[in-house]
Length: 242
Ligand SMILES: Nc1ncnc2c1ncn2[C@@H]1O[C@H](COP(=O)(O)OP(=O)(O)O)[C@@H](O)[C@H]1O
Ligand SMILES: [Mg+2]
Image (cartoon, rainbow, N blue to C red):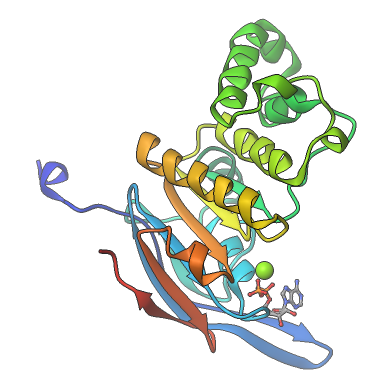
């Protein structure tokens, strides 16, 4: 019964991650031995200067890209070296992503954008069979992010803050365990940025969603439980959990 006494649980961790990009004939190292452990239900912020490798790290953690050296572990099991199909499955089911520029599809309305991950995941037949259930779920999440009055609006009819809320609802529709957010407020005014942060905090508390958020704004970073800084390819403690 060891599972019952393993507290607190490490949800996602990185061991000795290294990543370099080729520039012409040069190998430019970006990550040089990143170590991080994130507990289930924790909200961690990563700060660092532009170009320090924050997006690179987030992509490795969410299996969008592979490290040159090192390991990614989910619940203590290595995941970065799994067969491609298994990695695809984890990426779609375990991780939810939100980005600075929202990446909504301009032709689709809000509800369709939020449901897009389910359309992609299921066969046409399966989707049509369950479409009422899915649309109800989509509407529920849209209400949760405060956009119930915008259901049939296109992204071009939404403000930046509303588009980011929509992107968060879309990330949640796949019921992820870990939300990876790359500068989610980077394109928003202060007020909308704070509202998005409040929404992330409430999702973290209400759903025990593990959140790893990249930002270059120290004030926003403080809203997470703790903050780590990426500099010279490594992570350092910036602020411990209270
Ligand atoms: N796909 C890529 N190919 C080549 N270089 C890249 C690529 N992605 C990022 N880089 C470089 O790696 C460094 C870190 O980038 P990034 O992770 O985007 O930093 P941050 O998100 O902290 O601004 C930068 O110097 C960037 O130019
Ligand atoms: Mg970045």
